[in-house]
Image (cartoon, rainbow, N blue to C red):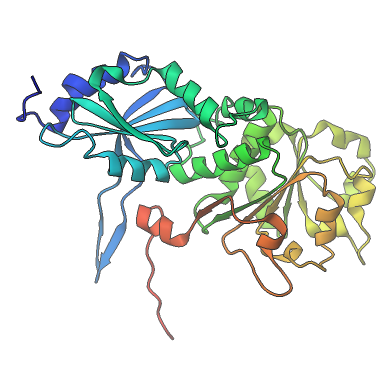
Length: 369
């Protein structure tokens, strides 16, 4: 006998879906399951002088490998709908959140879409995969069926940096971090991230560095920028949890204390400091071994070093054995400079339009004067 058609969506969740999921090890009291997860703020709409927010997006259930890695979305519908009625919505949310498995349920069973294989199926309410089964499928099916390598597993298991003054990543920041560390774990050496101004590029860079250092995939990091304010803000704000191993390069002081540089892991530098007067190539004096860094982050990579014949590009070429991550809101593609030509196609893009649609950025009006 089917379940009562009078039950609301909340009734169905409370009576049937909660139990079906938690019985398989997805505990509500642990890090493996969250209910009613809000992942956008809701678009800000302007009507003349009136401003209001549209509804934010919520997922009914998000299941996790760990807090850094969501693995599944489950959407619930009331008993008047078919078992697969919510699957398209679950798939849309899963694609936004970079999640591999999407499910829908009306309390009578589940419909599943597996993004790793492209297959869909339905099954009974008591046949939801256990935590161990689903995580094992993810590890086995990833990378077109060749599975995850040891480096990928180690970086997946490394959580984000959390603390009293550190906000958890927004969904798109988590996507950007996870895609970047995953690509580097696979051996990709040039990575481009395109994120709109105001969406937290430096915070994203910090979480990438944190997870690569803590998982042991990288040991020495160079963060390149072309303005002092970019460097100082990064050190004092987003990178503060790493302050004990962070150093801002000052050539005039550092050249007399080269032996002390070895105690640091994350170096911040202006191109101008590393080049020096009349293209002096200060970077060679400070770091005579071109393999010194295994990760270079290029902030605002559409400027300066984007040009093939730039003397700033020489720094990137000197440290060419390192993994290079380019970060920009506006990748430049001209005859003389190409962000994509150097770094490859963006591994993740979060545009101004995305930010406005999600309500993380305010809409704007263009006023001609």
